[in-house]
Amino acid sequence: MTVSLFHRLLVAPLPFVPKPIVWQLSRRYVAGTDVESALDVVSTLNELGCKATIDVLGEDSTTRAEVDEAAKLYRQTLTGIEGRKLDGNVSVKLSDMGLRFDQALCYQVMDHLVAEAAERDNFVRIDMEDSSVTSITLDIYHRLRERHDNVGTVIQACLRRSSDDVARLLDEGLANLRICKGIYVEPEKVAWTDADDIRRSYQALLEQLFEGGATRVGIATHDPVLVEHAEALIERLGIDRSRYEFQMLLGVAEALRDRLVASGHPLRVYVPFGERWHPYSMRRLRENPAIAGHIVRNLFSPN
Image 1 (cartoon, rainbow, N blue to C red):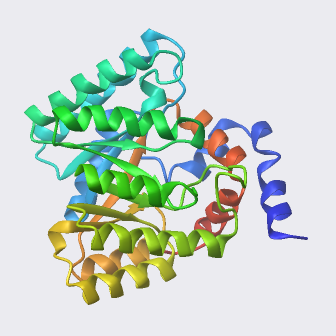
Image 2: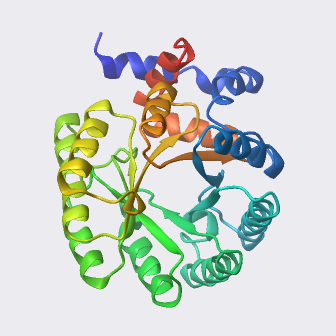
């Protein structure tokens, strides 16, 4: 049995599994269903020496009411971070802000949200979604960055276009970027699908960012090979700790996370929460069945 087939067999029955059982699979990776639960998790992470970024679970909103509700939750999150003096910011998917049905609305809502974050001395990260919206996501990021300093976005190492995107963003001075492998299943004409090719792309992009003068880089990975490469690159280039941070998902590779923190590296944990945890979990598993194997491995691992 191939690994891919094994992962797909793990995913296949999940739509028929009762939600309480699915929650048992998800709760290590989801902070809860409300803002206060997420803030409590961030408080604990801060005590462990980690920063955090909070994500309100949801994407592909189809109505203005859904967009308004998502924006309201982000405002409450920013208020809570400030009120509790937590070391955390927020990450936002533009499709949750109406990207797929009203791009003008999406920009308007994001402009207000980034401005409110600035008033609270905070930061907004625009998450990257599938390749169908890469260009418009970067365009909106560019427009926001012309008006605000406290906004960044994400580059996916799996996409063949990413080196060109990084070069353009560096030339424009838009250099607060998170780099990740990318979880979306993409056609081969736009993305590398081989794990080694994606890893090589990630390493090359990280070098491009550091050597190109990026002001801040989020090194988002749980891959020990990529972590070791990043550590070696940071040391070789003499990169100041103000210019980078490692980033990891809540509940994943905690032993590696703790080692990085103990070594003095800045590290931020991605903390998702929200009522839409179930469709989010199902969608992530359908889009990339390999995640199922990752979940199972971690469920039976003490770290």
